[in-house]
Length: 381
Image (cartoon, rainbow, N blue to C red; front, side, top):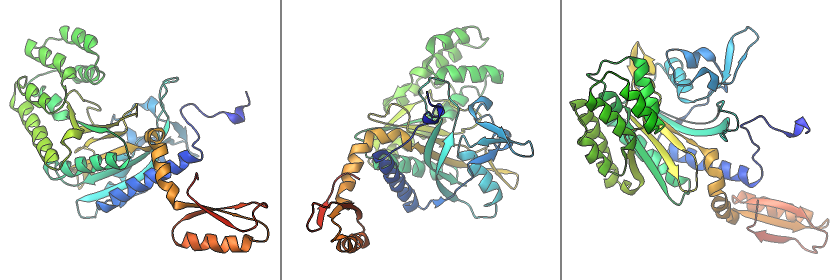
């Protein structure tokens, strides 16, 4: 096989209609974020390894592309956008009045297992709402996430909401080492019920805790799951987090999003990253999670104080195959083709400029069989 004709694992080419759809999606989502008052930020593709490794275990070392600069310092291709934005806020924007609303469209890079079918490079469109507590910003960010899913043109979509505080609340009066807590969280997140049951059986904790954690992976579904969870809530911390999710749902339902919202109380990713609500977006025909987000109140520091923040990102590339034909069809009306011969090309170019000034895309195509210029509206581009 000719090596110049193959790509690194986890990467792909986008061509023709795929590129057109991607740009349309990026433009639509970016415009939505802009209309909500989010300002654009662009960060370098390269970051220092320490930026992601310092006081954070959000990503494993083996999940990052690493190499050295000319001084021997470790560089990485950014595997995430939240941490670079935290760096920007702590440095470039440290004197800006809070709250700060930022948006971005950037490629991110992660190393996934070989033959796993996951992409190692993809485009994230996202927002970060920095500087306000949960009750002052969570609802806005959830509504914006739902509006973004709607903007993608999917026939059906769901926003699944959890709360890391619900999981952490179970440990409020439970003395247990961090490594055990992380293992329990991983089994619950993976919905690995048998391994979870076996692991809990060997821990020296009360039976009520074992029963709670064994049921947690099953606690997902519509709003009724919150009522069922209340029956299992054995302390005030658990009840408080359920009440908060219920209040959020009531507000989202009043805004008309009730049918698009579900819950997963066993959603427990990145224990030392998220601090409140966590959520994921799904769409009909899209196999993978296409939107991820949550609250992270311990990541950004200004004047030696942690600043509350919440945000999300959309994996644009995941949506391209699903919405390709709908998006291209909607753009056809903005396209003209002008056929001309050698004697009519000046007239054709003038006509094309006239149409472009009106906002249309115009494709000039020579055709010596045409005695006059022919203007055709619509068609593939």
